[in-house]
Image 1: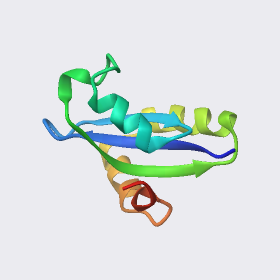
Image 2 (image 1 turned 120 degrees about the horizontal axis):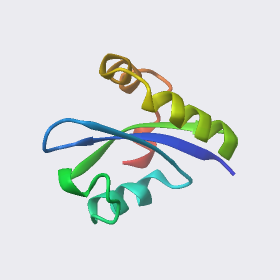
Image 3 (image 1 turned 180 degrees about the vertical axis):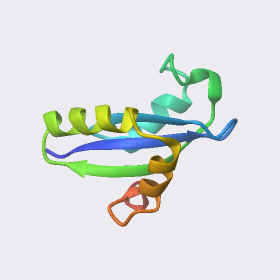
Length: 89
């Protein structure tokens, strides 16, 4: 079963949120429904980055790495060829 790390961007202030999920499209819906406390104050969100990983462990490590990333690094990833966000839109 694949796991994914994702980045969503607030349409209010442009900030980013990083997470992992088995279903990034469903997870975006949950964020935009306001069920995630840490993101509900900046609704709506749009999915801007998705990366597939082979295991939950890999996804959790990658998420941890992304949470430390600078804005510049995140924006470089968003434009990178490994971004499969178009598969989820």
